[in-house]
Amino acid sequence: MTAGPGERIVSGPLAVTLLRFGAPLALGMGLQTTFNLVDAYLISRLDADVAGPSLGAIGICDQIAALGSIVSYGISTATAALVAQYEGRGDREAARHVAWQSMIMVALWAVLFGVIGLVGAGFIMRDLVGAKGQVAELGTGYLRVILGGSFSIFFLLQVTTIQRALGSSKTPVAMLLLSNVLNLFLAVLLVYGPGDAPPVFAWGPPIARALHIPRMQLVGAAWATIIARTVTLCPLWFVVIRRFGLFRRGARGGLARRTAGDIFRIAWPSSTQLVIRILAMLAVHALVARAFTTQTDQTATTALGICFRLETMALFVGLGWGSAAQTFVGQNLGAENEARATSSGWTAAFYNLCAMALLMLAYRNFGLPIVRFFDDDANVVSVALGYLSVVAPSYLPLGVGIVLGSAMTGAGATRTTMLIDLGVVFGFQLPLAIAAVTLPDPTPARLWLVVAVTNVLGAVVYVVNYRRGTYLRSAATG
View 1: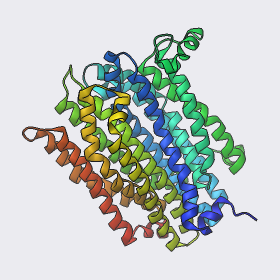
View 2: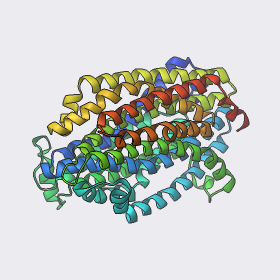
View 3: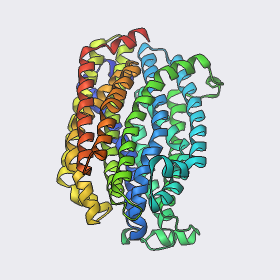
View 4: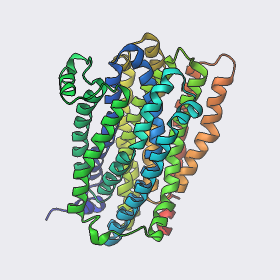
């Protein structure tokens, strides 16, 4: 008789089982970023006076939108930790109850964040971030749509995370592949409309003309993403109901304060930890916008927008392997196999180290054609290549830190991981980043070095804490 996914997680050959489970998750999280990369490519083929500012705008908007996704992902992380541990103990009713309660919490957050986006997009872009000129104008419209429809990514993350916690990693990846195809199709129609399009997308304008779809440019990319994600949710929702017996009418109900409190106690430190990471990226964007751009020259913002889109690939692939580590740690601790739980974190970190090495080599060796693929302006290319040459090597330690942090989260040690990131970012990165642009003769390279060293320092702190094993106490007392 073949062992089920949950049994393999707690008893199968660790290296092989984790590879089979984690590789689809890493691929799936990487596919999440292709929504953004597809948008960037399509936008880069618009008229030159629109393409450059649009690339700079979406680079900023991505980080702002990520704040909402990260808070939602914190709820997903807490849900996964609890569901995995209940599943490891064989208590499926408790796992199902937690899953439904988490969906209510995500729905409440989606409403709140959507309202913030609809009402405050202009204030966020101009006053908080300091964006200027067309970057601010175009970004405001894009941000209003992408935040207003943020429920789509929140629920997509939640449903796929619950499936992963229950031992399924391949179905979400298959659906994300289909979602990316749909996103590309819709984006071509909505971005270019009946107007000019690159030859490879010449099929789009006739369809848009027949359907009376206007040329929406940057805002069209936002609508395409929201629609594609929403459509993908429908079959995923069906799968969790039919395959895992979740969310059925008899198992629903209103918000249970005790269960919601359990989720929140794990979620808020995890959310805060990841929000800190995104805020650090936003802070770099804001410093660049204020120190190295003008009303008529937003070259540095455009270049950083491209780089951060590429860097998001490294972050999300790392979160994929981290999700695998979190599931293995949670289920093995639930099965009272502490040694296997600890080994799971190290094994997943090694796999992600290999993935980051490949990504770093790709960016270092093929950075020129990759950046020019999005924008061939010589100044943009120069700034972007300068960033990648300094920061890309630090993706290796960054990846190790992300996975070990997720492994600790799987044990419920979210406060520990939050405090680590809080100390590294606010105690080291932000003070040095501000100094880098306020000292005499500031240069972008000085700021890039601060980012790279921060990635290394964070990884060192995580390795030391993971080796000490004190995070295991969270599982023992959780």
